[in-house]
Length: 395
Ligand SMILES: Nc1nc2c(ncn2[C@@H]2O[C@H](COP(=O)(O)OP(=O)(O)OP(=O)(O)O)[C@@H](O)[C@H]2O)c(=O)[nH]1
Ligand SMILES: [Mg+2]
Image (cartoon, rainbow, N blue to C red; front, side, top):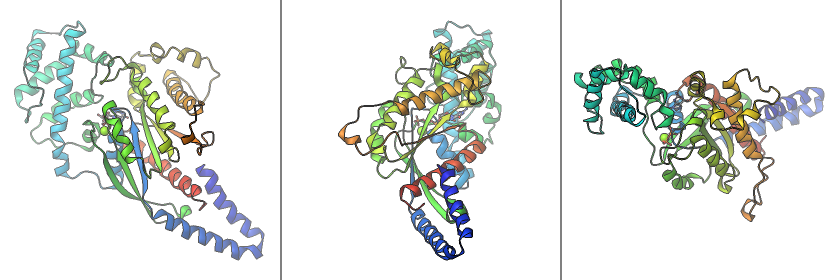
């Protein structure tokens, strides 16, 4: 779509050279178009982030802040310390609790004592990382039993960043600790309200130049948060739907019988078919593919949860699928494409929408990787702008 529209602009330039007599009026038209674009760009472009819990929505908001609003000050970094301590505390408590549930044994008596100490603490993280606490956490994270438990963490809810923080624990324990940007991107706090971030980006010269304001809305993805989403549907130009590719072998925190990827696909269908969002562009971020690749390398297979994967892999090779990771990515993407092609019962409310013409765009992402998000978002922003302008007949 984007290329087609840009080509349109270039082609109109080419034709001017052919016919001298048309040159002036074509130039005039171009100028008018560009003026129209500039006027149109004055309106804020609203983007809504949707997806199940822990799919990475808030992490994308943090990236926008890093990329477009000078990142985090030292004070803001310090404010994140309790959240990071809490992430570590929740992770180590969960791992210790699961040891007995999974019938695993600690590697030493020292670790058993450390486990007893951790279980004796409150669920709130200590305000300061005292030496005793740090020693016990480190002993536990180095224990073979705890590592075996971590390897089975798809069987219980554990923060995706547990390993990141526990691997970096010695640095975090330091009294002079100030969270790095990477630490902030890995930290997790459940979203319960609706928040927004506004920022301006440069528009390419081919689209009129100047700056464009974007506003991005973040909502909570857990089931009990989704009834709030409708409050922000009005005037949304694009929905960024996040789906975590890595959660094929996990169940929901809020319902331990429901597979997370199945839930995400169901939610995607509901968003795709939502009549209030039918005129918004839809972009899917197939997120957390770093974790997905790590899982597959560690011997996990999507086929154990989605048996239809076996037949999918028998298809003629497509999209450069070289290994199981590639096939898994393509399989999840195909599931989404299939949903966009499903016929669904149209009510009179859907009458005005031609779903066969509606496009959905897909990107594989790692939301914690700033370079990845910078590249993907620059594509997304161009796509939204050209799409938006085409819809308003300015291109
Ligand atoms: N390794 C890795 N971690 C990620 C990625 N995306 C997000 N995370 C981590 O996953 C956790 C959850 O991310 P959030 O951005 O809080 O998820 P959310 O969609 O906002 O979740 P809710 O607020 O509950 O709806 C955080 O600890 C993030 O650092 C990714 O692509 N790779
Ligand atoms: Mg969130």
